[in-house]
Length: 189
Image 1 (cartoon, rainbow, N blue to C red):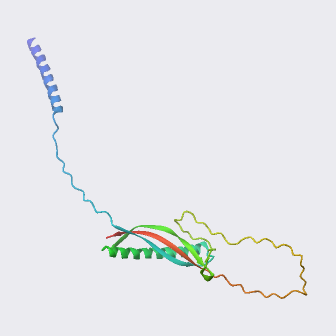
Image 2 (cartoon, rainbow, N blue to C red; image 1 turned 180 degrees about the vertical axis):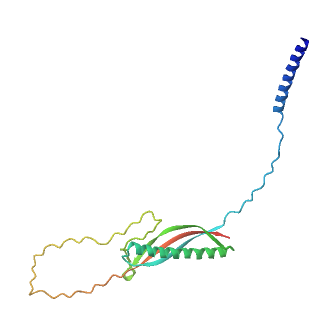
Image 3 (cartoon, rainbow, N blue to C red; image 1 turned 60 degrees about the vertical axis):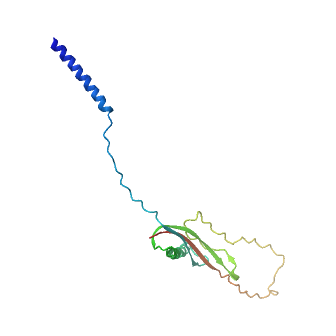
């Protein structure tokens, strides 16, 4: 029996020792490792130049929508060329070269017509697709309703009628110009 009691006491001491070592190992500081961060190269901010290209194109008074849109697109293409020319000029002034286009924004356009004696006249054709404008408002036509003539009490007879010669009407020749604006942002190298 002595052997049994000694074995039980030895087992209890072994369990007690093992539990103390487990707690001690859990409380011991974990081995540390040193991590060296590799620096990430920071690229300098992208240098850009922003310009607005502007151009005009002729537009016939009373144009159809497709004809007006074709003129507008012609003006936009010329506005892009104007913007590129401005950007190249500015880049040269700051000692840089012009890089690729970063963004292009259609800024819309307008139509201006001049008639006799360079007076402003309304454009009477259909509007082109100005794109970025919030809403296209068609101009009101100057076709006001003419009230019917009041009946005349004077009777004209053939005998007394004077011969009328048609008077030559001066044609109101107006020239219209369509303007387009385009904003461009170029990278500088």
